[in-house]
Length: 284
Image 1 (spheres, helix red, strand yellow):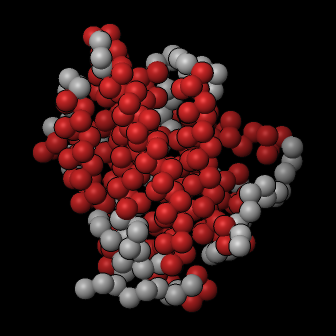
Image 2 (tube, helix red, strand yellow):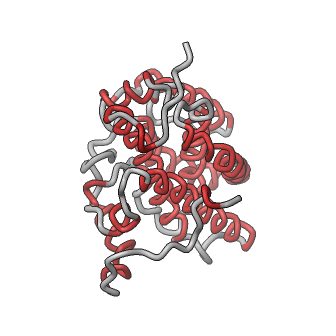
């Protein structure tokens, strides 16, 4: 049975608001952090076209993060509190997006993009029928851009795996990143995940989306001659890395990246941020 539509942010119950926040924080944080990692590849990509493509993808991801952070501001958070003044241990992204790239390893960037973009597309598709109107208003724009990101990564994977050296580089990146990517489907906690699904904020559980993700990524990578380091039938919590993100369970790389992200804000003595992108709700 379809869930009843929820009210606007000011009329949500405490349970409803907590569930919306539990869904939005990981979405926003992951888009924000992976965009910052992509930016590290500017002027270092193997071709001018790939440099421009990854720069555009990074810009898209930052825009998507803005869309989700804007919805969190409905509940009284400020941009400074969400990004620049939040303790790094409070960020909720999976560690997958915070890991540094292997130096000079283009296959790392492409494998990471592919695994992330398939996960993101599935999570967004499960929001198309959301019971929370403020989320529904944004899904179309984000899904359209994510489809381009996924196509870009797939094309590069096929190109890299066309010779032995490239396939070995892809295999090395998959071995390193695949276990971390599984955490993209880990909820903040069991109670919030249950409420997100029961209230219809997301129409499918993260566990079901993980199975769909495996059903897409595993056959595609295997078709390129790449082996999967984690047997798809054994992808429960025991297969996750010791530090896979969410809450305070981040790697040592996150504190360094967070310091870089917030350094200018701190060095300039900022106590607030200036909006440079309009709220989508203000556009007519």
